[in-house]
Image (cartoon, rainbow over all chains, first blue to last red; front, side, top):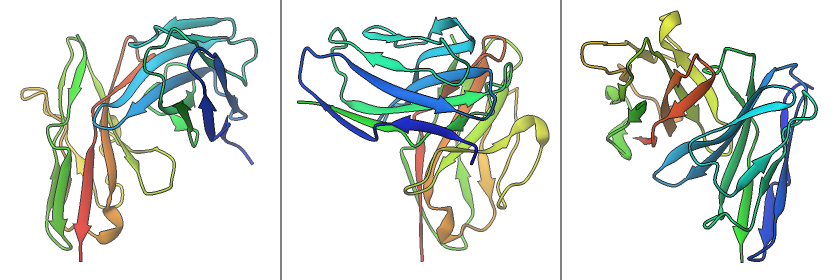
Length: 113
Length: 109
């Protein structure tokens, strides 16, 4: 069953802790993306990657880090430096050069206690 | 700077009424525009793209470069159209997608 899978769906974190969100796809897509979704602000791009071992900062990269060691995987780490981490995080993928045609995961909701 | 503006947070209509979801953009190059939709408890998904000039689920959108707009229209709204709609712009060599804040469409019986 092809698709893009995010885990966990819900995550709670204490202040000062880092947390890693998983994103895996088996669509053979080259590019992967992380967005943050907040009410009234739409989706804002955190990081994106066009190929393995390469990634670029999006509009709100501060306090986040990523890696792209495999084509299928693009984990996002929310670090303690992120001042307002409570949000809904969406991962997406696409073929290279087709950033307009994204396939999204179901999302991960992070709550900082 | 590239930007997508959706001026309405909520659009409320009755079934059978026409719908127009507004989208304006700012971009110095040649834009590619898209509409995405998120139904309740479903994933965000692509609805349509301007280059294909298609009609999906009765929705159409025309790119107006003079007015820098890409409004989404449907002549007769259905209750199942109730969802969150996002307008999006592909920029940066088509390597990333920039979204607007979204408009929630509520279609009442």
